[in-house]
Structures are given as structure tokens and as C-alpha cells.
Length: 368
Ligand SMILES: *Cc1c(COP(=O)(O)O)cnc(C)c1O
Image 1: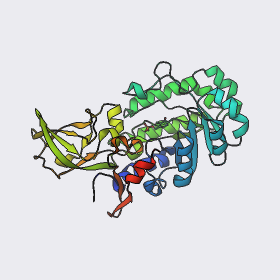
Image 2: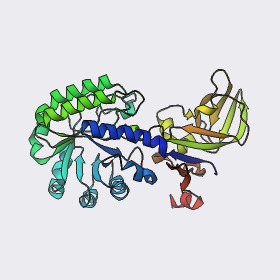
Image 3: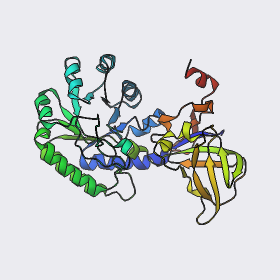
Image 4: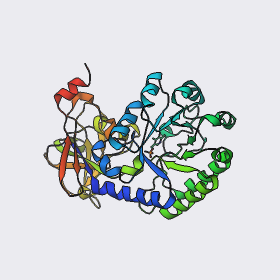
């Protein structure tokens, strides 16, 4: 197969899906895929067997959810336009507003849907300021409980999204106690609450049973339907970006240039200043050969990372970067006009299917 390409492994995906299915069955909560993290719909037929629907951050994502994922379609947006609302009201099961002013403005248009309001609990778990909804002057969600109480007759639920890669069950558990206390009187009046995304329950050794027990208690206490909106946790470790070494240059250190770009094809890593992860197979156990692996755009900092490899690299070698599904594929862009990775899927039966290729016409048509 011609590089570069993203390769999604359905078997790896299934491992995450089975954990989500376990949670669904054992705690009675519902799980919606957050499309902003992952919207490669060629694997939605597999995912939708294990999840309850999708959630979105824009009209287009909501449409994609309705068209390709099916089941429950939940819509959220930081700010809807009138046109968004007119399109959404035909097919969105849930419409969640970010502010009371948006709710008031569009209430009469959408009151047939199940309506929600994002509430910001002012607590969070995140390693990154960029993704922290508890940051100063944050625009995400309503904070004033009194104001929420005043509009309660207009809504059926609330959404709280306050985690990012939270793999610590104890922290989650404490957060939930805080939320129960702070919003208990509101929750009792509502049909549903979404606890958002960012909980890393598919990580090895996450205490799934304790999690279920906690959610069941919460659900029963407030007699409420509980939703989660996993993005990263649903697709973690299920894709690679496969590249080929095009050149090896030396500037004090050895630098291998591959036929992909971190700026164009793994932008999330660059934004958060995280190194790419290599497929373990080529990494050295100890010592090894040190390489900087860099991209083929003209950006000086287009660097995937510094790695110790088990053997010397040569031109033509394949390099696979691991964990490139979430927030990676959705952000690919045409910077520098470098070749866009194709998308391939390794199906459950082991067959590899190329589901998308890009060419010069796609680059040209991305602008005019
Ligand atoms: C980003 C986001 C999610 C998904 O978050 P992950 O960290 O990928 O699980 C879910 N809900 C909302 C409202 C979001 O903004």
C-alpha cells in the first residue's frame, strides 16, 4: 500500500467498544460518541452496535451523526445561528444550548426536542489549559445555579463536561459527589444529565465495576437518565499513521524525514506539544540509534519526536506512528499541499480495505 495512510484497526476498536458495552449493561448509562474527536464514519457500523448514538459540536457533525451513526442524535454548539436551529430541528433528538440567552432565543423554535443546557461546575480535570473549561473567563456553560433554576421548566436535562483524559477513578468519584451536592435539587427535576466526555474508562485496569456502582447510586438517587459522551476513550489506540522515510539528513543529530507532516496530519500533537508515539516494534529496548523523525512540510518545527530505534534507518523504511485516531484524523489539513494520507481499515476479518484516497483535485477544491 502506498504511504502515507491512516490505518484503523477494528480489532483494537472493538476492545474499547466491549468495555463501553460492559459499562452500558452494568450501570445503565448511555454512551454517545463525540464526533469532534473522531468522525471517520467508515467504522461507525461497528461502533454503533456498542454505543447509543452520537453527540456533536456543530450542525455538520450532527448531520453526520444522523446520517452515518444513527440511533440517538444529540446536538450541542457553543453558539447556534438561526439557520443551524432551522436545520437541526428536523432530526436532532436532543438540543443542548451553551447559554441561557441561546435557550431563550430559540426555545419557541425547538421546544418539541428534548432540550438541555450546558452547566459549568467550575471544577475540572485537565492537563492542558487550552482544554480546561474551568479556566478563567471561560465561555463554556452556565455557572449561576439560581439562573438555571429559573429556566428549569424549559429544559429536560443538563450537560456537564469537565474532564479531559481523566484516568483517575477516585477523582471522578469525588467530582460526582461534588456535583450531586451542588446540583442535587436541579437533578431531581430533570429527565437526564450528561456527564460529558474525558473519562478514560477504556484504559487498562480502570476500575469498571467501581465506576458502575458509583453511576448506579447516582442514577437512583436522582431518578435520572445518565449519559456519557466519550471521544478519545472510545477510539484510543485504534489507529496508526503509516509513513515512509524519504530522506535522512544530519545536523549534529540524525534526522529522518518521512512522507507526512505533523502540522498537516497530526496537528493535535503539535498544538499540545506532545511527541508522537512510535509503534513499539521499531523502538529500541535500551540505547539504540537516536533519530529525530520530522515531517516533509517546510515548517522548521515539523517534528514528530526524538526516538531510540532498534536498528539504523534507511530510505524507504516504513515508520508507523501509534494512536492517531482521536483529534488527529479530524484535524488533517492541506498545509504545504503535501500528500494527504489515505484512510484504510483493517476489518475484523483481517482484510485491509482502503476507504478513501485523496489527490490533487481534493487539494485544489479545498480552496478556490
Ligand atoms: C470534547 C467533548 C467531548 C469528548 O471529549 P473526550 O475528551 O474526547 O472524551 C464530549 N463532550 C463535550 C461537550 C466535549 O466538548
